[in-house]
Image (tube, rainbow, N blue to C red; front, side):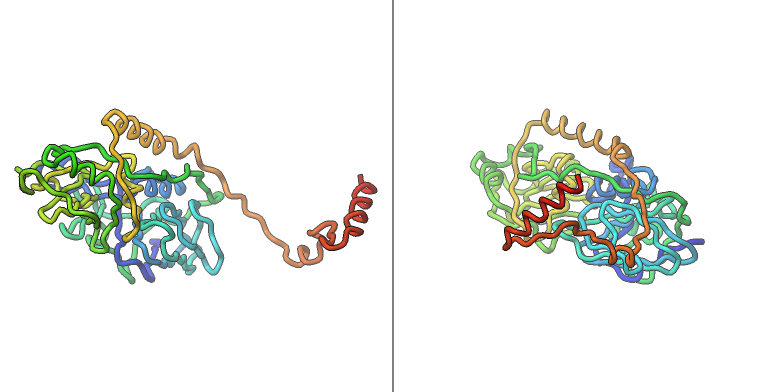
Length: 350
């Protein structure tokens, strides 16, 4: 069987897919990719289903080697430098790693997570319908933990055909949009205004379960304990110390701290990509706007195949290139006489 062997990898890296759903009422967390657009785009490039399992790579670098056959992969999400067998490769593209070659990915640039999809998807045994890893719960496949050097992934051999690229819309900018509540009545108007008007940073102690925010203390009206109720990705809890926690993909399914707001679905991936220590703000929007943006995001995922294009390969003859006059008619910016000579030569040719 063809394998993709992990030579080195960032600590915060694991196999993730669209997540496991249908059992949250039993306390089973959904997990899944932090940035669903990055996952879907990478999978689309190699012909997989959008939410098929792929490798979610944390902020630091990684390297993968193909064994017993060529492997076609694709990468999307936060950009990185890419090198296959010593050759550079573009981002948001697919590439084939020949048997014995190594793909090297550098550190994340301007974000936190990148996605490496493998043609034919990663092989494993689903747990509750998903391969998504939740290390705390010991769930996931083929390894129920973060990936590490020496791990081997059984994969399909690369197919024939050209490599592909995908043109994605520019990442959104501006504040992270939130809808108020569901327990915003546990906070005064002044506290809510402080939450929305303040700059926040993500703590380095954050993880896939929750992003701890650093900023002003948000005061409660009636204490920090409520009857535990359900949570969703993006729920913003405010514990007793007044420092909010945004619940992420490995969150618990219920919680007992008041939730001042909720990150909207369309902005959750963008929020997940914010590096620790980077300043950002929140902006409140209506439920109607949040729903409209969620529909736009779902339509973007659905139409990703329409954004694909082929990468046409060509052989570059370096010797011929060195002998060719690729500069055309050269002139000196300091000598007006050469401009006139160049103009005369152009007129003769036309």
